[in-house]
Length: 408
Image 1: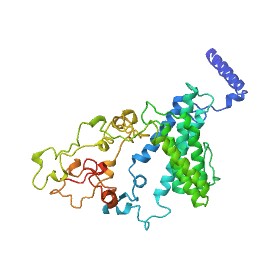
Image 2 (image 1 turned 90 degrees about the vertical axis):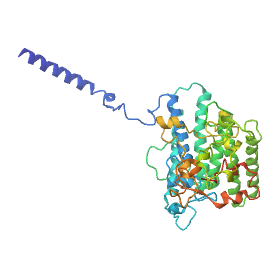
Image 3 (image 1 turned 180 degrees about the horizontal axis):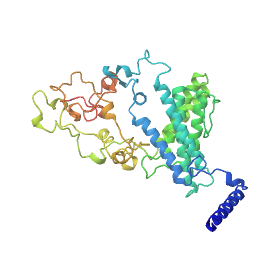
Image 4 (image 1 turned 90 degrees about the horizontal axis):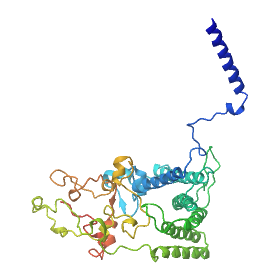
């Protein structure tokens, strides 16, 4: 009976304490520890940089076709004068305007991808200015923000080229909006120009980290942007302003071309500079028969400096490639460990079309007997033959090492 009385007194005291606590308005305010917003999700500058890295990953996926779908095939050449599709892919051709409509997925997907990247860049810029973020230096903060602004400007450059004037979004959107308004194509270009020029002094000339943005990338894009702007102005009948834009384009182009940082590679270099292309059948006399000879290709096939540009370990400026301004990073070890988009599916996507690849003809997946290609895109006759007319044996880009034409 005594214990029951004590327990009742304890419950009563606890209730009084709870009621007293409820008088404090702050006690009733929800503070969920696991619900993140743009204001509480960031606590370190490293987390802001992770958003910037997400921008790099996003654009790498767009250009390197990590997802391998029709949108990225179009983005990488399907429908241009360089590439066509094989007959077996005729439903995916993008140079037949009879089957392309305004509702084709490629238009919406491409448009959406650019705005997804803009959203990431805007988030990085917002987070970089949060008062609780501590930076190692002002230069570190400035470079982080410069990278984000570059991505945003790069998006609007491409959107302007592809869609004309588009809505300019510069802030993080946290609630539904339906009041976006299109700008003109020239205004879209001008926004990108202003962004690129504003960050020039915050981008390093070179960086020890491969793949990170440098000043030359902004100058290169400014050259393109002023050229685009000049064309838009000329179409609007403003030839005087167009001439000024063209002169700016030349100026930025010359800064990259004639500057001390970049130059064309003229001598063999890198990881395989002392090697020639290594083909299995070509190296095996036993595999070659009267109707399977490499003599037509002039074997041994000799490597050249253009072939060197595309060998593993040779892509980055930091590795000695002085032509490299900005390079998407593809790392097979990262692909195996965690980064499923760190890949180049080009050997599957691009290729020749074999009309009769039966067992009595081309077999295997090695590159000199047909390869793994599923032939999403193939070279046009213009790319394969016409462009090299009159200089067939002189242009190293057309050499057997670079442009495979002979298969056993």
